[in-house]
Image (cartoon, rainbow, N blue to C red; front, side):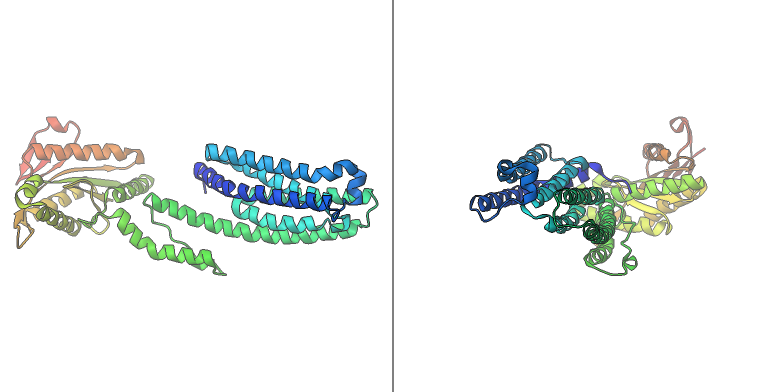
Length: 422
């Protein structure tokens, strides 16, 4: 599944903005407490630190490390606030700084037999990293944690600390098992959340074809509950987003979705598709003489009549004020002509807005059909249907005209009140 990079970067930026605030405060609190305890004589530098960096630097190194970390977090925060974007490199840098801070503080404050405390903190941080930044930074953090722990153990062994490599490796193995379990669980959660996000993004574009696979969740949890809620809402959302509330037909967005999907299917199968552009004749006069309430009732009844006249697989849409479109899959030009004439005749026989208005409304229809070889024909089909519709209106309305090349130069043969291109 392709990732929407701008949205992902914006989401990462939001996470870093609030997290860097907590990181700065926490680092300063830990550094201040450590320096205060050192000055008060409560906390003494471990022998390994004194031998490695010297007593003078040991007293200041905690403050230096926490200050550098805080400055880095402040810099990232300022950059993200200015750009409102943060890609994977920036989140990875923040994660690497977290690991460096944790193990520097463990080295400066703990005796070598207690270096495993860094693994405990790192395991907690690993879970948060996977939750907020994803799998790649979490795996990098896992490798960096193992390397930092082994480095500390090597320093401890070189300075003859009371530690054994066998114990260190066993502790690291336990950490690895725990980290693998955390990563596996969080990866599964991320995949399911990404699936939900993708469905919501498609729904934002008007595509409600997918539903959440509840049966795939063998151990239902909160994500499953969200998936069930989406499934319950999917039909209602589709109706709200894709349906014109007045006519009961598809709206323009719904039609475009169905149109593109059907053309893609027809292009793969090389089948025929017909398009009917329909306009209610002199509808403005209905609104002017009868009022907009009667006009709305006419639109509603016209939509109902069009759906009744079309076949079950046809797509009926209201694409303008008094404009409708019918998409007829697997329909040749002859079939489209029969459908158009049936609709023209149905409107002639129908009286609308009864019992108050008793309005007679006719329709003009432009008809086009073609064998689809390439779904890039979408706009051309639409233009042909419109051209045939304008020909029907110019030739007297209340009729259907079939599109053909050079339509404007063709003589229309009258068939009742319907015009058919010779």
